[in-house]
Length: 395
Image (tube, rainbow, N blue to C red):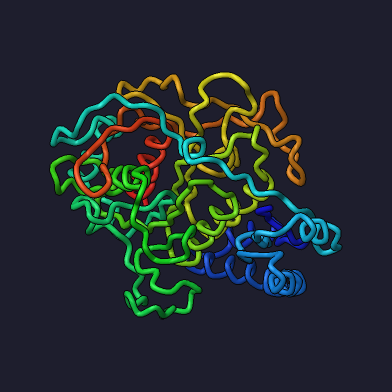
């Protein structure tokens, strides 16, 4: 059982709302982190001691306490899961939803083509080149955390656009800045537990190129070619909810201005929507822009057609259009409801909450093919990094 274990104590949303409205952006992030970590440190000790004890007999593995929401991730046996669920200090135990990569990443078949040497039609539609030329704004100074399969670091269009952890010394095996990650120079591989964020699948390279590819090899793909990419990598062979929460926490702790993810869990797979909402709201409270894809389910099945966490109210949820600005056939439509998700129980359906929030180009999008060249991909996966790039330009 790969489980997420929930402490009963949580920071009241009203407390974080006060921090959001009363502090500057820089102080706000520090204050939110301090408030969340204080609670986690104070309340998780007994549960962690039990897990460590059971780990000695092989019943527990991969213990990962979080503070972005008061949660502990762990792989445990059925017996341990039942024992933990009976504790007074645990609200509930959730079996983490693992999805195969083809179900988690939001792409659909694209028409084969290659880069033309000009800005892609998506960049032209949203007028990104006009922003570069008229205002000299390219996203410089902004860090975008890309939650995906890694990044093709050798591609000449992205090699100079990667975030650099300023205090980490490469290759010495030491956690130089004491953030819990050794050699996290450009980000972290959360599946294998190391700083090698090389993309072995291709999806993350394509997404990163749409955010920040600078066109060195001939085709302008990146909406914000001056921004920096923090690579938050997972193998995503079997995508885990808790792993993505860990990625979001890393982004908050290490200075990401924007977190973007072209993935999502269908409601039929029973994701833990309440915890997703809390993780996203706490991340936003810290001053981070959170952007997720809506999904590729097309029409029908409202109010369960938008994937989680694209259904979270404060998340910027992205649908897809063709380059003529008409909605694609595959783009998931809302609305969504939280009427049966405690403790929220809001946005009753009908009418529900309108989602997606915005749509962007996502059909036959040309972007990076691993470490060289360009390739087309389609889906709300491709629309979402366009919006992340726009957010970087605005910041």
